Image (tube, rainbow, N blue to C red):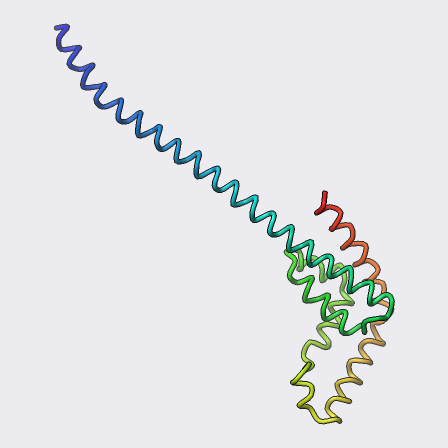
Length: 162
């Protein structure tokens, strides 16, 4: 009778030991996978931080140029809108700085560079008048937005750097 128990014990060991080894291998693979995912997430966050820092530094430069009137409102709003849209919070930003986006929306259809050169003089003058009228209508609101945007970008840069 005792021999039967030994036989069952040996058979159980032949089943349990390979299963335990397999479970250990799976746990090891899981640890490696989790470590790789953590590294990938850290790299992703570092890349986002680098991107956002670059964008926000550019925003600060453009905002300063707009405040010092070294950059036309329309050009500044165009550049700011494109930069801010590259941030992940861009849907929030168009509600925080509506005048910047309003001017951009009003002029984004206008041709630039080579396409503008192809226009006739009356066509260019008509577009320039449209742009200047829109700039004049939104100037004070844009200046407010630019001041707030400067604060916002500076604060975000501080948070990112911390």
